[in-house]
Image 1: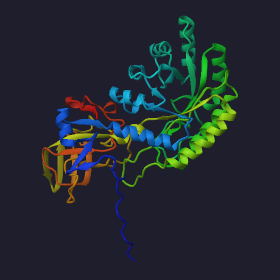
Image 2: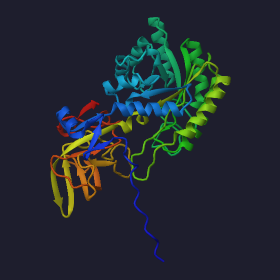
Image 3: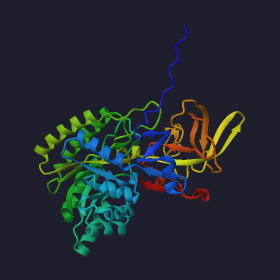
Image 4: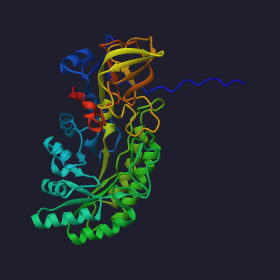
Length: 414
């Protein structure tokens, strides 16, 4: 008996941007006019209205006591970071360079935390001088910070980044569990806490990040509960009362066919229970969520221009002036095991119902330079705009921008 064929999975609707007269509207501006305003392609555009609405949605779903931090590694564009600094409760950085961006954005040093497994001595000194919270990732960092504090008289604010004995199930990138370069293994943390007490460092709490890019609320709930339970156990060894517990992040956005948006409601309900327990077990401690791509990823698009249309042995190629050197993730070369297309569109032909099977590629001399492989798009010609959605996170700064010497992409906040 012949089994009925199943329809191919499709992308989640990219309905966050309105459409008018067949064109995508970004920040209230039609794509053609925005491209003229920018003055070049390729470019990234980030919609500040979508940043605002994502934060409002998150605030409504989570308990008011939960502090939301933006991890600026997701998108360190200075204008965007300055905008986000006004919306969130703190910024998380992963280098002294990011710390400067956070400080320039007007974020108070007390609301900045600094993580990273290989902090150089100069970076540690900069962080102590700035007064930011430093997430310790090794015994070496603790010793160096103690020496810096002793020689300068400046107190070093520290939390311990813990490598937990569990991982975030179904996460796109596992940041904890098993052997990891991140943080201090949970079983070694009590010893480190004793060292912190002996050294006189200003201990504040724990940073426990199990994984990222997860679309399953039940997996995030399980990881958050395990994270909080671990923090409670470790708090018994702390030299001073715990002031902060960073529960990590892990909230994902849908990139690929078959994926759906994360359901925040059960996560919010679980965090309300955790917050209630924390008020009794860790009085005075703040609970922090550290989110990056979830806050900015869906608010951004990447736009490039078709410069040629070629047919090779029956396959249509749209050759654009953008590619993997600007958007490594969309090319499939930023962690994908099996290459899958990001959602793409012809941004000035959004009302066209007729489609054809095409591959959108860049100008680089490598077969890896693919933005969309054998996907269905309206018929496009030179001069049309190819738009890659879900591009607000891990764009230019996560891409080999100097590869083959092509011009960089521009970034705008609309």
